Image (cartoon, rainbow, N blue to C red):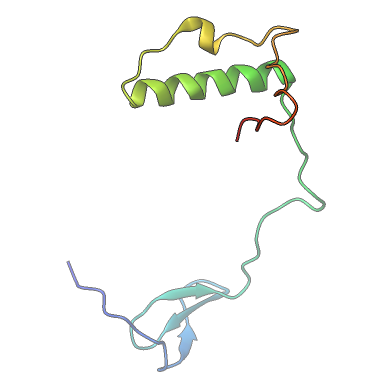
Length: 98
């Protein structure tokens, strides 16, 4: 198999075998003159998963990370949060969580 050598394409460009194709005269690399990115006009549509789907994905990621670290996974730690279970705010004058 021939070894690829770096080429700055200083030898110039000649016509290729196909319409719109040019080739480097030194190394033979092909380029296409009429190339354009194929993309529909306008902005892409934004897909936002539901809050439930985001929570499921977050718990699955947390489980994967815990298993990769070799830590035991408690089912209750990865279950969906329940209403009224938010941590209590710190007492006045005491530092809160980082």
